[in-house]
Image (cartoon, rainbow, N blue to C red; front, side, top):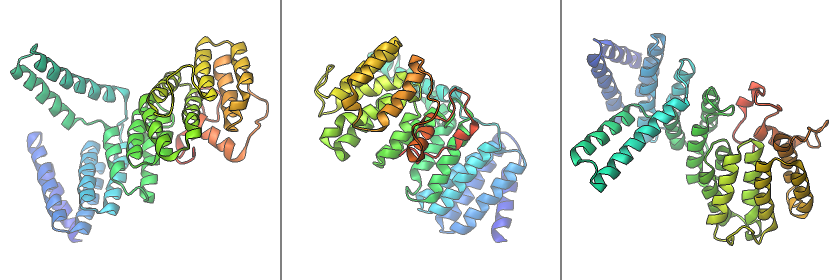
Length: 375
């Protein structure tokens, strides 16, 4: 009851006036909430945040609700209040789901452009082509824009990174965030969000799930660097070629030729156990190299001969030929098999990775794929 009364007073404070005065009211509300948390009144503060959230939402103030829940989640995380922080994080997603906000390429691109302007201004100042006064103004303006318009995917990834890696709330959060972001350019979630999640999981040395998210991003270089670390720290020296082979085949199954090529080139150049090539000492790496060339050429005869000649290497993993069946369909016009030769766990893995449909407009049910299904 007391928490509700405090929230009502805080909300009334925030709604006074308009424009700059309204922003000042919001800041005072956040100050009161922060003071409550600082005093250790976690439950009361949590209830105040929730009450304000639903009041903002009922008034159609989705952006205000989202920003307040995001700042509140960060505040609770800083005081190691995982449950309250996770709850407010889910409310951030609820505000996104109930508004028209989307993780768009335009928003992500705008952020990248601002970063480029900041970097370019600094470089021109260093080289003497831009006065320090003008350069400082450009950098200050760019930084101000970034601080106020941090892209949504970065906000979500930040919250994800602060969650307890073993908490069920984290699994629910990432699944829901990816489903929301699938309204953009990725059926299984926006590539930018996948990239940021992959980097977080990589830092946690959760290589399997990191690899999943890298596969659904467009960051072939980041994926390669992660795989080099993964192979060097967890893998056998005899399997150094298999780490990148799997990634390349899966990228191709997702029709991402560019990332497939980048991950192969970067991995083979940077891995300490791989001698410079091509050609390579490992036959499997030579096969992948020839396969990427064949994909660019699109000649079925070349693809068929290549697969036949490297069967001893391809038999090292039973999934390789399954991936190649799919690659044959996508890039060489091979008709799909009438009946699937695999099922159960392997079938679920392929469906999770590549989708159950044969064209780009697969069933929407793919959006619910869990990032844990792949491995």
